[in-house]
Image 1 (cartoon, rainbow, N blue to C red):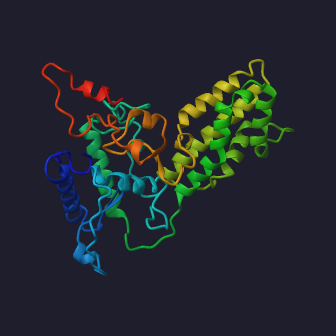
Image 2 (cartoon, rainbow, N blue to C red):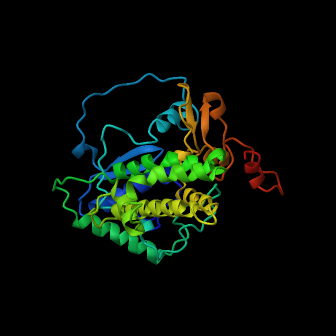
Image 3 (cartoon, one colour):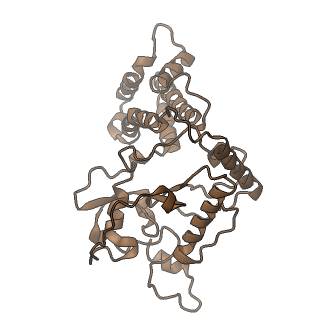
Length: 346
């Protein structure tokens, strides 16, 4: 919708996917002056759309595999789901290296309206481009083209792994925040609550000379370099980390005030703002199960709100999250609301 100038449709082979792939490759060879060889898409796993196989691939081997009786359902069924869930945290081996300082993101355009105005039904608001003004989308498309054309693709530079730094922030604060948000015992014990916060933040506080500005700087600087650059990745991680530090330090200060219960509200507000996926993870699943979430076109709303470990048998026939009924369901009867077909699945 964004890159292809709003011209693609869901019709045609593979629901229009072949048409979209050809459109992207035409852009690569024309408007983008052949500066890129293909497109990588993060969808159900990771997909590589290579525009010229003859130019960029060497055939090493050719194997005629034996058909299997397993995985004959929707999109390969259980084998497909297992492959995707094994890659929740990436494809491993540094097989893909991202230049985080050469990103274009609609989230970096605060003046864009309509990003969260859509008919998606989930447990929290989801961004979509369908109701964003076309003038705004055209401007974002132009920025993507400018980024591609001005980048020196032949120059090898050392890239900053901002994902690894974001992971450090989450590793530092995910479990403590979840504990303070969910554990009833510590939430009912003001002294224990204050002590836990004080220990979490003790490296940043000089109690002989309290200075909120310096405390925030030390807290952020523990993970994030002071001079990180001007890219979206640095500014995003800095803004989120600063917000975490500021809220935690404020919560600690409030614990010794006349209204220490306000510190609970600050922690709750912070957790609800962050909505980290680490707090939804299933934990360790048995070897024959996966941590099941809605994966197009399957899944229910409860699977997004509360993922859980599921085996092959109870992962089947879960539909409704993506807005349409399961396949092979009879059409609605005359006068029947089609949404009733979905409601039966929710």
